Length: 82
Image 1: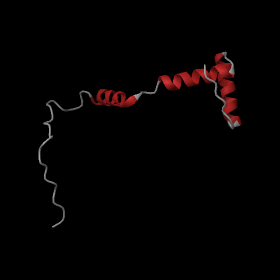
Image 2: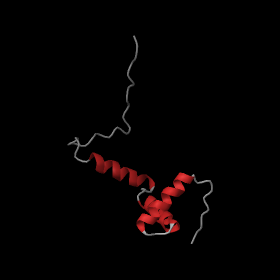
Image 3: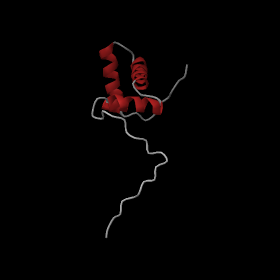
Image 4: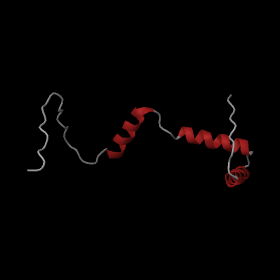
């Protein structure tokens, strides 16, 4: 197992960690391990996860037909100004 040393933690952060650990009946070290486990468990990994989350968020929000594919199609840019 790995070990970490974290230096220069503010006193307020240390005190809050101590309070949280006491509230949960754990040592500060175990409390920090739990916080780290929860932090990495809730983070998606890779671009595929982002795409899945974006798709789920907007599912059922509008399009009822497929969008035509534009690959190989010449698109004329808009003319701006005069």
